[in-house]
Amino acid sequence: MYNCLDYADLNGFEKQVKEYLKSTDESSASLGLATFIIKEYRAERADTVAKLMEIIIRCNPALALINYPENHFFRIIMISGSMDLFECLTEEAIEPHLKNSSEEEYIDYYTKLLHLGAKLNTIFSDQYEPQIKGVHFNGRFGTDDSNPNIALINLEDYEMMNDIIDKFNSIIGRRDIIKALMTKVGMKF
Image (tube, rainbow, N blue to C red; front, top):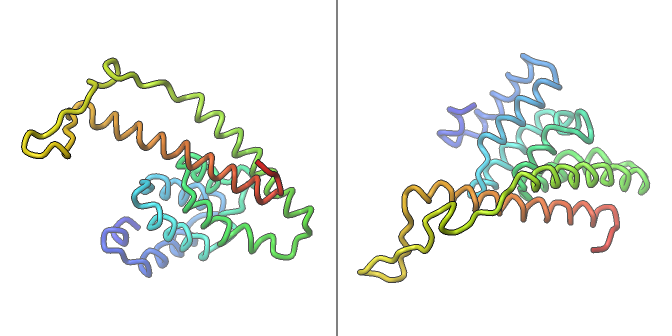
């Protein structure tokens, strides 16, 4: 699958997913492919990774519904905080699955996802700690003498700042996912 990603070969990716699905059961495939997606996920590539998830779900929509609501795909969505992945899951798997459901079944389905999403959000949020300028990173950014619009960051601070930005984006994303789930169940916020 990774070779297909290197060359942006979506047809090849789809063929490899289908081959993988022949070699394992649905539960293992769901876990394996969800793990693949989360390893490839970066906020700056969210739309591309969502396209990969779309291909996976179209190959076998049941993969996105296994172990509901504790589905592997929903978990990686909450870990990443990606609205792109959430929208892919709802459009490609959940909405078609609920197509002929009553309003009560629809609301119940999304309510269970909302409760799990809120629980996961709490678990992830409890792991974050404050990052203090001067303690966890060197402090103020320098500027380039030739161009004051360019900020300079110490190399030792770069990875930590990147991590802070990724965590912040996942927090905002999880908030937006929970709001979307609340809207689907008819809650006002």
